[in-house]
Image (cartoon, rainbow, N blue to C red; front, top):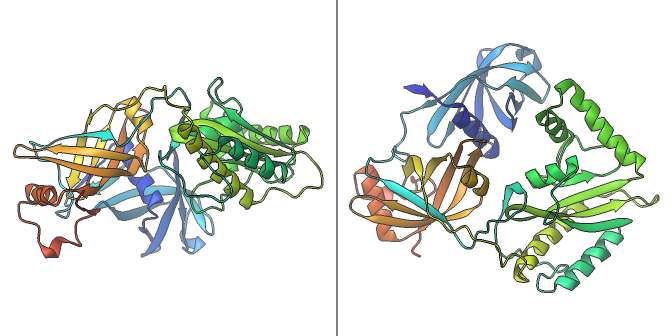
Length: 414
């Protein structure tokens, strides 16, 4: 039997399908076709497809279904903008999930209590929150940037910036907050503001496999979210592009400096000198590497040493659980802001007979303004705890045939 989900879980399920590039089956023209979600926002879903265009009718409704977390998700919605390689559909009013699950994912047993704590040091900082989580760990070694030598690190930034640009700088958000649209979007999303040439304007697409740069659509949505009527958002974007040209900007790059779940500042590289080549994608990679090392170097040199820590234990509202992980809901704004995909956590599961401890990582993540859904994948648990948890959930001992069937289970002795 299928059941409708709430709006926050609807967007979580669609966003999960987008991030995991799930194969979605769409029924059109009497047959089934494979599509994939490219983007999800409040009003629409954008799909990639290879369906003959004549089968896609503007305003026509189609059925979609896919599998996620061991269950089938289905919805019906109408196409608003058909296209050759992508089409846009309205956000479905209802999404259904099939409750007849495999044994892997279970409703939480009645006596199960769960809590988690952040792994390692987590800081409560007075910096703008960012949607991207930057793990508090040493970045990969770089031949160009040495985090132990802060002065040398800054000198290397200057050298590389001035090799391609006329202006450069580091802006920190300690004494001021993001102000311009490009600053605010870069801080909030963790993506780079990239203007390869002022004449060509903002990029229309992101060439990186992982979302890295801000596109024209990001700015259109920013202005709409700021209260600008949709029909006037394009004029605001054009105004931003004109302002760059009128200030003699030829190329510009803003790379946010991220620490944990905060944007603590950004590196700015701007060229106003005619005759220099436009910034290429290699410049983005270079200064992203600098930003990661710079963030770590600040920690090494005590920049955050006086900041308060987040070290509380938080109770979990478990939605479902398996021997390899769990999904929980959260309604606390502080946690919704702090929990990011990639965050490391420690989890305690308390049953009547035993407490089980595990370390894990936030793998699935959808956060709204008032409620969020987060999936934790366990990756370290004592073998005897794992065997108990498996039997507790499924009512039978763990056997050899189960070793490849437990979703997400990568259990090793600590």
